[in-house]
Image (cartoon, rainbow, N blue to C red):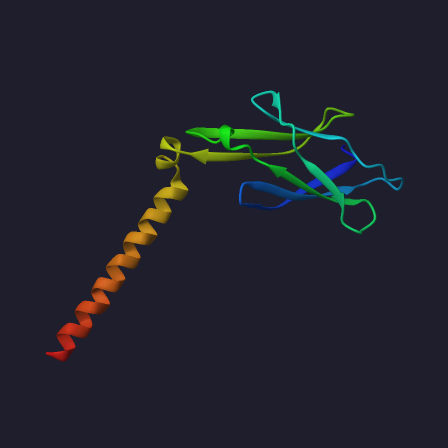
Length: 127
């Protein structure tokens, strides 16, 4: 079992953010790493939150790593090698086959139909 637990808080403006919590009584600031396709990302920040044994983690996602398909990033403890979490960014043609994008498209089309139907109802009730 890992000495840390990592919880994602958000992905905003190209920066993945999370909160890292220690399960140990003696707290040491961990040495974390992030990889994409087994290559290390050079930039991440780990700052104390003010809570005992808790840090705020920020990982800027390099623009050059965003492209068609699924891009997976692994966050790990360098000392133990244990993976704490991962996240995936899906873009391009791979998204068209994703069920979530299909549902979003259906919702947009349904909203369009509802507006057209309401407009039609207003027009027919006036005349």
